Image 1 (cartoon, helix red, strand yellow):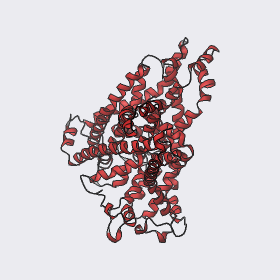
Image 2 (tube, rainbow over the protein chains, first blue to last red):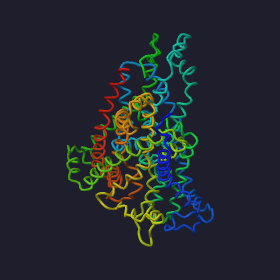
Image 3 (cartoon, rainbow over the protein chains, first blue to last red):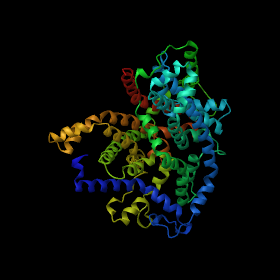
Image 4 (tube, chains in turn blue, red):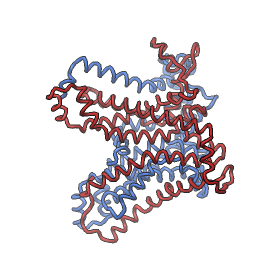
Length: 276
Length: 305
């Protein structure tokens, strides 16, 4: 136990600073919540910080009505793409961590580089390619894009995850006669649940929060929620209170996942920064 | 990760081939969608393509030369430089402070950590929308946003115009929401780093009479250098590519323009594909300068394991 830190003045100071910083982080949420819960009549920029006099849901209802179809679009893209993405990452991670072949390290690094590139540098060919395939403007095209550009990070996360599985476990399987597929199916896959949770959450969040691919590859009949929210915010007709409620509604899915499964979210986050 | 984690028993050739076959689709996908497309973008960046019909007339480095003299691009580069430096510096500082504070065995550590990290779960668009209203520069009777809060709390001296519409420092204010979003990440990195420093090291120093401050300065901070490096790389490449946040917070204001946004506008609104590709290439090069040395270094240190 750190003796010096039990000094009461020090401890109080530490808590004060932490609470102050926590308030800074929570302050936007406070504004979002109280704005959303006010009645239309109470909504006044000059009284932004006042608590609602009565709890109403009209702002949320208006925002939800405006955003519901777009939320649906987002989920329609994000759920399939994160599932496919995690399966691909799992297979790749398996091969790259346990079945090294000549040049696999170099190839893995080249794949990893794809995680860092600015997508503006591939945007024009991507759009052309999608047009040729007839997928530009379709949500399926967006799914494909998220799966492909998710390959580097999902492979990385799974590779690191499987690297932590002791080889003895797999060697035992080898001795029993299992081959590459068998080892995966009977030994590794059952152990993969935490890895899948991390990757699913991470990919879900990334794809859901994406704006660049969404705004370039969808049409005005099927915008995901990030594009719709940005349009709301830029519009002259939509009131600021509905915009705020809209921001909260749009943020809800990933926030809920974060609140319930934050531990796994954190692991995905760290995987991107520490390469093993 | 160690070489011992590789399966050492004799590979059967069909299995070996199967392994390669399983990752082949991903390898091909990356080869096309990353490297192939980069090459294609390069080609477009050296073409005269402006307009709906693709025009691949080779113009050499014309697009790039034109960018050098482009006023808006000059604003972009300056903004990126200012933003990157401030964003990294402030995120590192706040992240380190948060981590050090949380490392003091306080009660409610998990709660605090969750609070500091949650902004990472939301989209930059959400952040931009909210903070645009918070950083509202109206004053007098129409005062609102953070200015209003400062007034209500008697902190009038903090009221300012937030300068979001003013070059050249408007972009510095965008660092505030960016830091709000990302310093949880730096905090998590540093906390991990701090936790991996053995307590005996600190105890030994204390026994030798060092103050906590000295311990931090001379022992802990130097040991955190790899973490700082990782953080700088990740934060740096995010800030060089910054796009969503600017779109949401600036709503087309040129004073806050960055290459990512310019590329989008000039390509898809202006149909200036050649120029857009050139901007894209510029962004790629700046990110590559940051990432490639780091990846080479990582690859080398990993292969000794």
